[in-house]
Image (cartoon, helix red, strand yellow):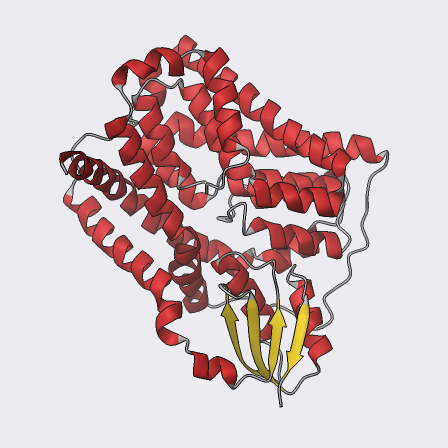
Length: 408
């Protein structure tokens, strides 16, 4: 019981410390969403060298996890974007975002907060140019405007709803998982393990072995990295974890393998491994030159927290709780049974999937209501439109419809 209380106390300290930064990050993400969403991204990435730069520049600030980035990448491929820009976007987007940059600063200090997005930016460009070299030409793509949907500028209300409803639901459980795991590491990992964690020949291979197949979001990975640094892991190896962990997982690997082929899957995985280690080693060297206090001064999570952080933690906990449990409160079986179309969409995995599909379907004139059941991977649509139009709209969102059931 004493150990459980210590883990809870350590996890709570982590959560309280990052809360004000997350609230600000969510708000900025909503403003960003007003101007840059998946439709904007798709319109601007047609292929070629300029698209690689655009893909990375768009991807770094977007608060999209490695799960949520897959349908955007699938939509890019469907609209004719080149493989180079797709893989650049897949690499740079989940590694960091405005929310995770602020939390990185809160727990790991300014150098981590600057170097991590820089690594995502440079790494995305490097992977893109290597892929472009293997395609033997500048891919210009054949982007066509979507036939059944045209997005417009979003209102501030919708943008904040996206931030504090869908985005908080999407990454909320991973934030909670991250701070709990950080608490477990802080309490249960012995202090003398530092002599192993500080050895780069052991630390870097172990980080890659764990992080590449693991699903962890950019923000949720930060408390874990902070806890391991406190136990002796080199900051560079922690940076490698912060890059490789969010950049990919088994689902992303499967998507790249299926849609882009073995050769580009190998380039993508090798690029993640090499760039994360390279930036980690460079970071360690900078720390050796300039002094560790400059780089990890905020990684000590045992300090006191102020009243603003405590109030923010209460607000953030309420937002995450409401976002996670609201769907089960407001949606019922009776409402689903009244829908005229049921579409099986196995690729849906997170709240961003729900948001993307609803955003495509609800603007259609004759769509009255849309419900998404992540558990059964089904989309329920109340509409008089032909099923093929609904299927086409879901395809444009980056998802494949496996089966359609028409009721009545």
